[in-house]
Image 1 (spheres, helix red, strand yellow):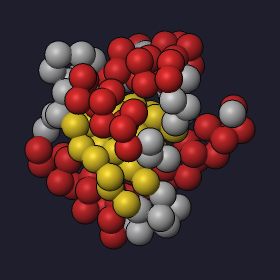
Image 2 (image 1 turned 30 degrees about the vertical axis):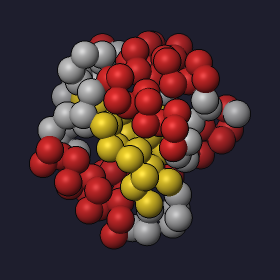
Image 3 (image 1 turned 180 degrees about the vertical axis):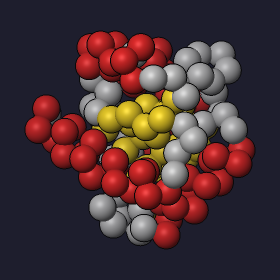
Length: 126
């Protein structure tokens, strides 16, 4: 995982800081951060990261729509972050092409164990 490039799409500042700290300590490179859906799309398409952490509920455009727009142009491993149960969005995740899912609040250990599995799933699909 070291050296992988990541964009964090999360509207809560404290969560963004926690994710950035965890990722950088693990040797990943945070190449962008977004606080709303349109920013997420623009930054991901500009930076072309290996992994995107995408909050489901963000201002202006939710994470599912932002993911749809990103994946229509650029194939990337997206991990959805949400407080909702997985079952309520599971079919949509597969249809869109999202590679992983994390329930909030996201613990650092859960984040770091989910990243390799999601990236592996993404690579198998593509």
